[in-house]
Image (cartoon, rainbow, N blue to C red):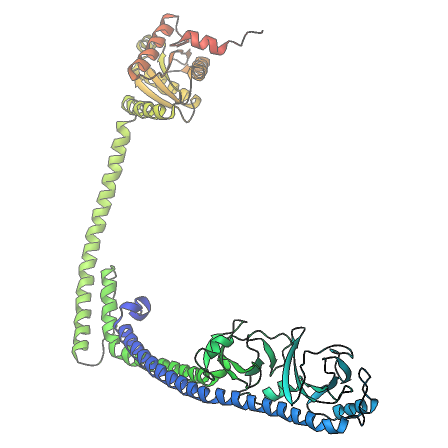
Length: 558
């Protein structure tokens, strides 16, 4: 016989093997999680220490590189003072000489620091602009005071910062004025980019409000930097936060040392802690492989160890479900499990023998019980059926009348009764004999049964009397049904007995409609039948002639 299905597939959570496998799985998982947490935490701490050392150093390098570039530009501007100075003084209000402009133009073309030079009078008016700039034109003013020494300035014109260097230069006739150099702003991003601590980091120069002046990626519309938050823990301290774009970053800031500018660095968290994330992924994969391997080994070992127990458990379960054709393959081992398996198989053989005896006795009992049920059904049918006409009898009619009265009281539907009596039946019975009378009753019952509706109840009330219970039928409908019954019976000729002469019979019918009282209901039909007999027979009478006439007469024309 085929092997029983393993409980591992039918009830996996209740099997001993599954419980052992789950124990191994949970233990391995817990150990792996602890080891993973320790590894990840150690990697995170190490990276955090590296970031706290690396990012401030990057800020320092970026600040020093930018300051060195600015100072070198200031020195370059100072060296131009002697080269581009006019050889003679200019009268007050006169234009600066063309020789100075030409020298400045040559100096600007070979300059590594400045986009443009400007000669500014003592009152701040630009006398001449040389170089690539469209922000200033001769005659405009710069907010510069008299300059008597070399300075670096930062101006904000039209919300755009401008970095410039200024040094005294004889522009006016009295020898006063300023030579201004506008630094190449496009060079600053490249200076900052070289100082990035890691690829993907953004080094920026921001003002005191956090507005970005320049950054390493030269973004055209950079978002403000939360400078207060970066400096809240001290200059150069590394902070994690969400920037204006909602990106989780690691950043730090420190003052530049000139103006109110600061150097900042922002690195996306995924880039800053990429080594840790890589470690997490590797640890996860290693843990997953270990968990799967140990779970598979536990499954193989446990399944092999508990398979005999599972077979016994499955067999016991099948016996509890009524399956007695169970037999476990007997192992070759003679240990406790082998002895238990052989004893179990012996028990099952005896149990199958007892089951066969019980099934035989039960089959005999079921056969006799079926015969008894069929006999009871026949007796029950006989108790409610008239033996001659095969219609329902008086007892069944009374029960049906009770049910119909309850129903019409709930549904408020009409109910009518027809009492039917064969006219002159006793004289015909005396003349032709009782056998002919019984045959007449049978034929009339068949005729009426073909006329009434399926929903109507036709029963033999007693002797030559019949009754029809017409549900959901009012007085008019019952009258029409009675007329149909009367005419159908009267139109048929009956050949009874050995006379071979056709005989016609008629019926008298009394009709009544139920009006809330059972006794009055039957009494009204009986009284109507009595009037039909008294009126000459072969007719239909109703309990309320006036109501019938009103219902049958057409409405009077107005």
